[in-house]
Amino acid sequence: RDVRRIPEAGADDDGAVAELHGIVLQQVDRRFDHLLAVSESTKRDMLRFWKPTAPITVVKNGVDRPQGTPERGPGLRLLSLTRLDREKNLEMTLRVFAGVLAKQPQATLTIAGTGPQESALRQLADDLGIAHATTFAGFVDARRAMDEHDVLMQPSRADNLSYTLLDAVAAGMGVVASNIGGNPEILPAHALVPLDDDAAMVDAVIEQIAPH
Image 1 (tube, one colour):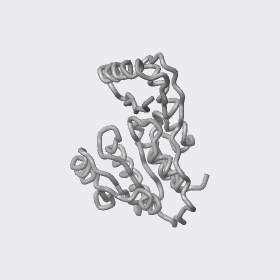
Image 2 (spheres, helix red, strand yellow):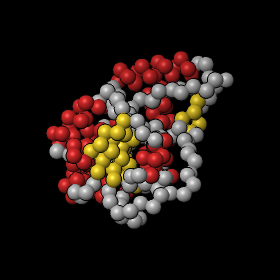
Image 3 (tube, one colour):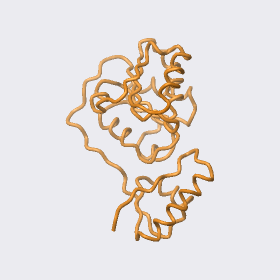
Image 4 (spheres, rainbow, N blue to C red):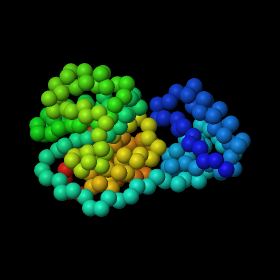
């Protein structure tokens, strides 16, 4: 049978969206004998919102470990590598960077990616007084970007099991992400912060440059 991807209800989806997802899955559920989820979190959401009759098996995403990792010198070069839309919570990324910059004046932030929020995010960087240390890079080579930065920030409002986080860990980067979705299944406690807790993420980002 075919293998199809089912959209997941995000952390802040409202009831109408969850209901729509439920209708989609009910249609799929009648056509397929078995369903796959990429994380335990996704499976729980499927059971909660969609109530499928077909069994669900979790098969987690995986990535290839690169051949060696780059030597990273002193500094704090932060990276966001995602599409620029509401779900990815990039307003928090910029607010947190403002807090990091106040404590680490040599820190820099690269916002890699494009999307509908780009203009608003550029304006927010100006308003926060961090534009001089923030680069909106557009599309980049992901592997090269990870090699050239120290810490990846991803305070998303919804994630299944993020390939970006997996790639960053495999590349030897420090990682800080919101404690939602499948993130706790792949990241240690010191790399996770509550959603929208800016102060906690500032501390966690700075902690990433210390050995564990």
